[in-house]
Image (tube, rainbow, N blue to C red):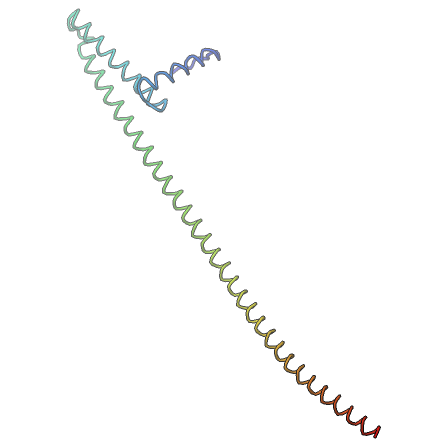
Length: 168
């Protein structure tokens, strides 16, 4: 197959034509469009060959041309179907790989979250225990302080009584 260098304007005309043909044939991809155009070309060649046979009679050169064209069309269609199957299998394999990757990533994230939750839970328990210890210590200090105050008050009362006796 040879390749022709096109001017930019010509390329735009071709792209517009391809887009219009995609809507005419109701296809989505360039590959499907090429296949439809090729099928149309083969059908036209077969029709031309059959008209030529009809007008000029069967000849050895074009006698089986229509049958040959149909055979070529069937072979090309089979190849296209095979390619489509391979693409589908590849897409499904890629999807399965991506799904596995996402599931393993999700599982890892859930495990990390569970570990962080465990650490937070332990931290909260330690804080609660520490708070409880501080409250007990505070209660003990308050109880001791109340006793000390009682003792101080009693001692002050004793000192006053002693001072009053000294004065008498």
